[in-house]
Image 1 (cartoon, helix red, strand yellow):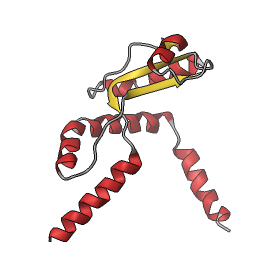
Image 2: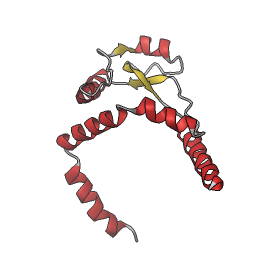
Image 3: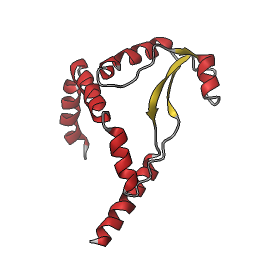
Image 4: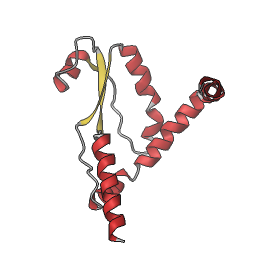
Length: 136
């Protein structure tokens, strides 16, 4: 039953999926990231679990796809995002992340960019908000 309503959304999405909008999105993410250290510290002070994982590792089976994807990140460099100089080969990627399969032939590490566990982050944010609300 939901399919007819999704067709219009899908058509709008397809028309909106342009290179210009993709680059604009990357720039917006980079701008959002400008004060991330300050924002994370504030969240941590409010009781949110901001435990970061290791640096972001991006593996690829096809080096050409990796090169293309890395090139699309270039607009973010203008806003302080540190980008790798180029791709690492599959062997170097496996030295960094031994669990990667032999199918991985290239990749890169985004120095200074980390992941966090979204479930832990959101659950701790909910708990911090509830605790703050109970104090009122």
